[in-house]
Length: 180
Image (tube, rainbow, N blue to C red):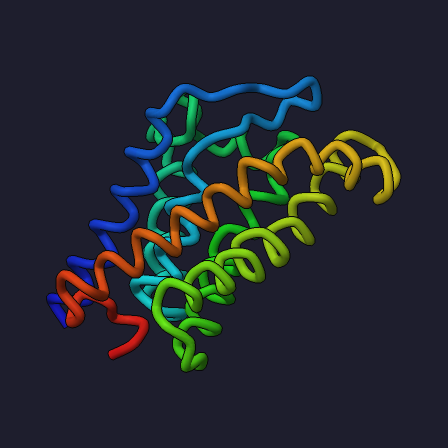
């Protein structure tokens, strides 16, 4: 139990630290950040349940007002902006990536890359595009077009998540809780 709580807290901190990487804000008001890499790693390393809990802890801290999102943003106001769909989708994306990781027999690196693409990009974009459409008063097609600006970076993050997960599996197999 203590070990699970420690891992959940450490990965919530990892997401926060990845927010320190300088952001690039698009015209739509949604920043490009490294934090989605943390979401992917929560699922691929911790597994579905623990990964989603780590992201929920992170979002609870953001909602409480801690400036943990990129650019030092925090508080309830961030849940009323154009990035709300992505924020709401974070724990579901981590859960989906972890669920896939737990059930596939591919090598850890390939499984993590696939899980990150499906969960960390596909599932997350469903929520992110819906949030963009709602908050910016755009059609789903227009919001999807806006979201495509994130795709090259997110594919790179999915590949990085696969490499990092594979490295963890090689160096310390017991640390890959999604495969325990």
